[in-house]
Image (cartoon, rainbow, N blue to C red; front, top):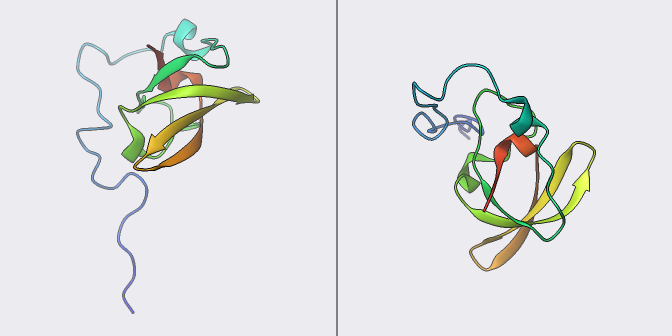
Length: 96
């Protein structure tokens, strides 16, 4: 048996990179965004904050907020034919 190579952030060099003009301090208003249940959001991972980040394969997808867990939100997406619920921090979410 061989050992599996890499982890969750493997092959994400361009996906989890900020442009030069976007780099710098985090916006406090984006960090504490408030979403209502039923609201549509885009999943856009912010690479400077690792906590509450979803798996990079879901980067760029659109979902619907279905609940809240602590400071994070539960976002329902469609992955192929299945519906999945991701738990994500508000800094990784963007309003539609």
